[in-house]
Length: 514
Image (tube, rainbow, N blue to C red; front, side, top):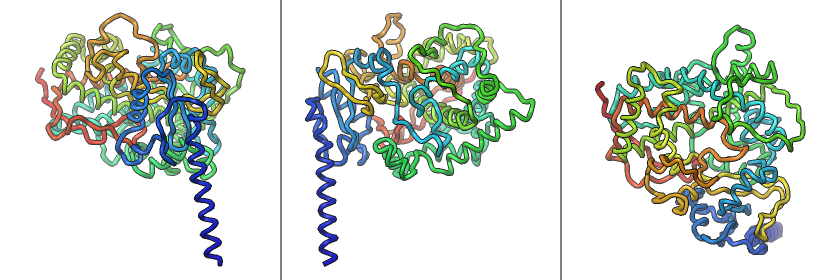
């Protein structure tokens, strides 16, 4: 009797679950929005689960399936979302109608995890107020002050690479390089990843960003069902990781306050900002324009810069400056290894600029135009984030369409697909740095490795400075070739939320004699 009742209840629950999943899959059909047919429970994301394709590759295939549609629907598992294809509509989402799409993610519980309190995850006027306060930290003057720490670390990298020039895992070595820089500049601690394999900071950072089934599940739950994730207290990171990085930053902040120690790093700038409320921007530089945001529509919100806010922001520096930056370095080496003419041209430029100069300066990096073109082209093909997400915060109707959305709907900007669209880039699958030599302006919102609009990556130029310094050192010291063991074409890792190859990219380095 009891068994039959339990079976009946289970059957009813199972039936309800299937009906619920089926109902969700009717969302775009009911609204006459073009879309590919989803599967129950997985939506259009089944290939991600079985590691067949990445989310960006799936979105690119949906993008390609509707060449004449400005906006199409898709299903992120059991969540309906939109893909904006039309460039004018993308410009509205990212820039012109930004007030309707101010947030990236739903509001999170800031009390349970200090690492959530950062410019990536904050929403609304809280984000706007903090973005305004933190912007002066990334001006040209501040970047110049921090370059010495980058160049000294690049010298240590060369010493490490000289020990073994064959079958070099550039991702591993560039990760150490990037980690030492971010440890010094964002966490204010002495670097050590390059010379100590047992470095605790390195181990915790690698653990935080390691792609694994458990990490994939945590991320999927937080992205697809944020309310459920908060109730279950399942966060992107393990509690031990959160505790470790929180303690590192808190200890550093306390040390700076209690001592007379002053360094040219982000920690010092945050301590000064916390104490004074503002930072001196110094001399105006036109390149700093991207840091400015329009605050005319903002509600005046007073923000106290607590230690938790500084801890959260330091972690975002780690997120942007470690994994995504080292991956960008690896992809740049990959493209240069396969394009020997581009590599030699970049090397000649570096040698010419660095002639009779003992070390790389900020102005040297600025003058390396062709190296910059190589980096731009590499980021076009493999941007760290291939799909930008914006969340609707005010009711919105896309101009010229019948598509209206309500607050909470997530909108995807398919950067990976746009960067490979032949209507914006001739021979889009080819690595052609020369395409950036023309002074002709590109159509807005067709180059998005760092995003665009007020939510553009605030640390964009710090990352570019770091990567260009790395490439300059590599080009001056080595001729780079891909190791024969690397299978081509490379495949991307479907379970990574950053654009990363699924296999190791290893290289042979030929030491150049001066």
